Length: 164
Ligand SMILES: [Zn+2]
Image (tube, rainbow, N blue to C red; front, side, top):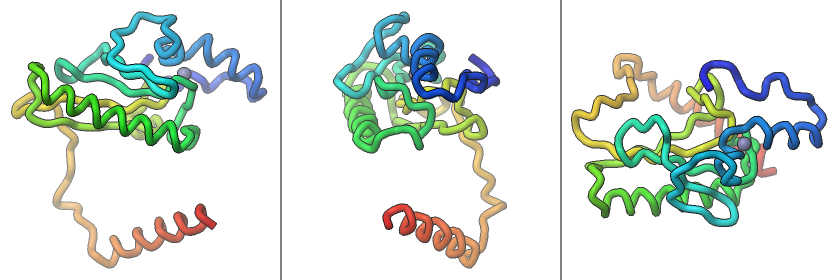
């Protein structure tokens, strides 16, 4: 599924978009039970299924049943349900025999963030010491408090604008 956004060449017409979407989106097919899947959980809004390229055994994905390309497309109740289910399966993983000294929840929204399947999904990843999975953080590039306050102001102003 690689580097090219799957839906970049789709027509703009919403009706045709929906039709093409179910025909081309692998996670829509998984959600509908039309593609091979190892199902963990299903309800009216979301499905949970095993990642076919797991970071560690037990790595699964929680995704909306109804197609949403990005976080911006995701209805709030569906996003809340995704998190609720992720929390429950994280508990279930840690209560079971699969190795999990910790859990990462990870979501990539957009190609620049590492999204490869353009049907939004939340990773639940069992973790243990020495498993080799890393997110790199450069601690030498910590910004000043002034800069942090500036960024906080920008975001909170935008948040207030969105609520108005
Ligand atoms: Zn989809």
